[in-house]
Length: 79
Image 1 (tube, rainbow, N blue to C red):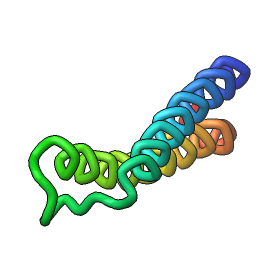
Image 2 (cartoon, rainbow, N blue to C red):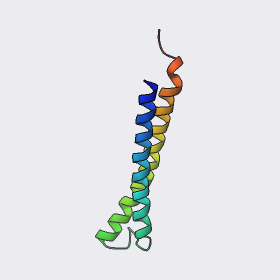
Image 3 (cartoon, rainbow, N blue to C red):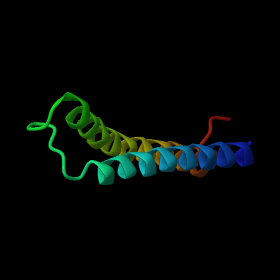
Image 4 (cartoon, rainbow, N blue to C red):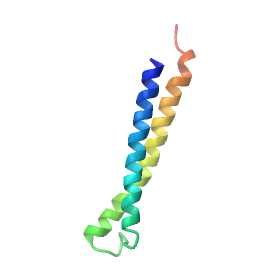
């Protein structure tokens, strides 16, 4: 069971890191834009890229903490 949990956690981490890389790539491409000053297409893309980068960092912590907690807490189960 621990092997499955570790494998699924690793797959989740890879997915979140890929999403974070995509968000950072969009942030770099829209570096000169401002979501407050520029028009809807470019400014909106930059705004959502910032939100995605922050949310992906939070999701990465959730995946890591829940996965590592499930693996480390195997001895603390009810009999």
